[in-house]
Length: 298
Image 1 (cartoon, rainbow, N blue to C red):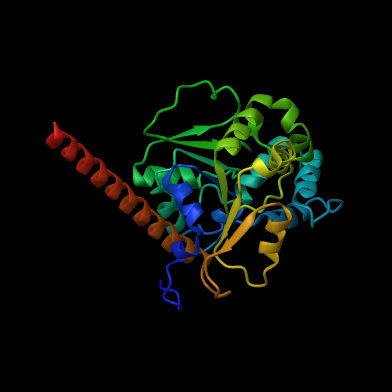
Image 2 (cartoon, rainbow, N blue to C red):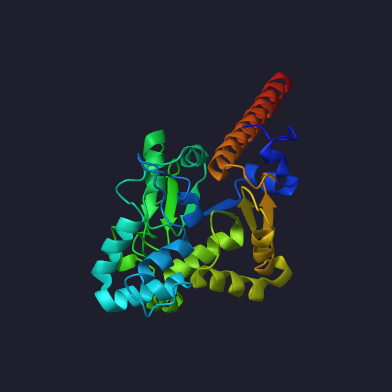
């Protein structure tokens, strides 16, 4: 896939953001929009966040179909949390979806930590396909475990559908998140203090992460690290404007509103990995040259 302009997608990134990548300071944040790239064998896709609310509201007429959290909360209130987990598993096609090429390209990147709000298992399956080591983190009890330097930490801070006790989906879950999970909140805050969040397929509609970012902006002011949202396309500019209102800089990769989002991301991550490896090879070469010179001087 080549852009009509002949430019690479990676060239859309500011130089400072690329330097942050090479320095290991990116904090990728993966949202539900990223899962939309995955398809089943018969061509089905998981619903986006807004669609999920409308689908659940079918069974709960009193729910606000335009508010996913309201629809999810109403469903749980009427049918119970067990039924909610079962219905979400059906709607999100948990057993049928396979990682997309965009997932596989992303998991080739040597990130040491990835944050995700997704309750599915597409990232896990993608890492396993690549035979890349990863450690899923859910809840607070795992935070004290020693880090494996060769493995990517996959921090699922909204839990997943195999661990319904840690699942953050309803109004009650969101309202009590910061209070009930202070260690997890502190852990996420530390990463946001030391890294630059880079969002993929994430709308930032979740109250909990917005609150953490708001606290950091309030306390740090101009010293708050920059946050970024990588958008494959943005047909009308509304998504970019939305992120700008929330203090994030949006980068649109392809100007063609009809471009395939999954293909754009696949090419982008492939280009990004090439740049990363080229930089790493250059760094090794410079270190080798410096060591050789030192030996000659000795």
